Length: 261
Image 1: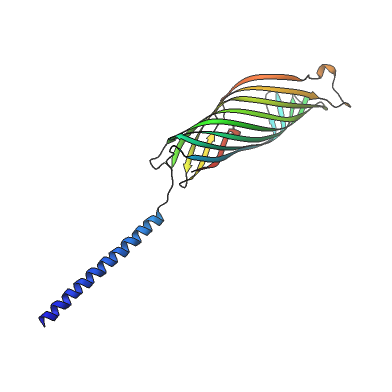
Image 2: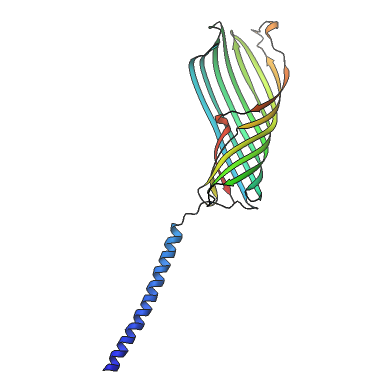
């Protein structure tokens, strides 16, 4: 009898031990699966050999009417403009890349102005397209231990070509201006990069400082049926300028996305 009781006790202990191990193994497996499935991977180490592709969009729209200034009254002003920028880069060392970019933009402005107490009225319509190519070096400074947030700064050399017509009505006399503008220079674009997955990031940057050299070819054309006096006609010309720009402009603020692989 005692022997049978001891056999039952030993069997129960062996079964309980085996069941406990199986239960613990199942529970541990479930916890690991839950942990892996609930982990959200964001952020990326920007090591040497990483590539990136991205694009940003800048745009602005203005519409004003009946604005009184010191020497001029703006009857109305309408402006629509945008810039689309595409870039690709390669990280030649950690948190620093070199790349190339392309930019396309349009600017459309209509404005009517009264000068000198409505004694001199001028209406202007301008439309232009711009094409740019640029090379840059971009620095990334990690702002979080998980490499989700980065402070960036892009130093770029650019060449820009812009052309388009403009029409000006002065006392019912039409003046057409055709211009072709070539610019080259240096820009600084600080910004913020935020990774929302392991490879995709949201990019905000702004051109706050620029130095450019510009050459502009201009020619004027007047309608033969209503030309202005010879003394009021403008001659075709070539203009050159050097500009240092430090100002805020919505067209210089870019919002976009980047892919890192």
